[in-house]
Image 1 (cartoon, rainbow, N blue to C red):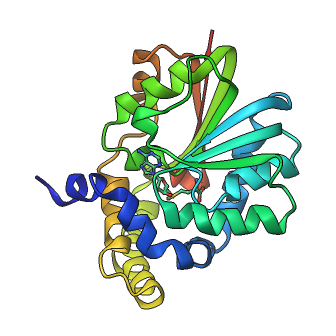
Image 2 (cartoon, helix red, strand yellow):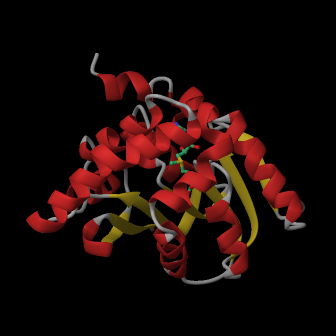
Length: 235
Ligand SMILES: C[S@@+](CC[C@H](N)C(=O)[O-])C[C@H]1O[C@@H](n2cnc3c(N)ncnc32)[C@H](O)[C@@H]1O
């Protein structure tokens, strides 16, 4: 089994190990651009949703931003990692939002919710970590009500060769070094570039959304294609 696949089979513990440093490293390593990406992605939700499911919610930045932008009345955030959720819970409590954001430890490829439970679904930087992408997307489709929308934000890969050169240098040389220094986890930040390179983006990702039943699929690239916002609806 290759290393990335092996890590994906154990992804909960990878994120458990780095949970305490995750936010700091996220903002530091992306020079805070991750905040702009999340903000832009959420703007794609058309209206305020009654019950929104945030998949791979992690430390809850994506969920909190949705409340800030008034895009959801109630949010259920799920994640495999207990420690990421623990950090998220503290942030939700600090923001006085425990009555509106509920957190649950769940595997996206096997959700406990009944069919057609939610009006919308979001997922930031989660899908590339699923050990079974199509199963995760099928579950997303199943728990959504008809006429609901999804917004997915994920890393992609720049097309321009010059940008790609600097991106590769940063992602494979600088980022793992800083990640290791701060998180003290040797391998988590070498997994990150490998998981991005080994993942699909653009039309290839849209084809998986279509395969599981979503329609009106579209995508927008951000910052030279380093990240991409995907949108789709369940008719
Ligand atoms: C890079 S973090 C993203 C967290 C957050 N959404 C954000 O924007 O910062 C990826 C998260 O996906 C979670 N994850 C990976 N596979 C999952 C699965 N099958 N089900 C639920 N969560 C999963 C990990 O535990 C981790 O917290």
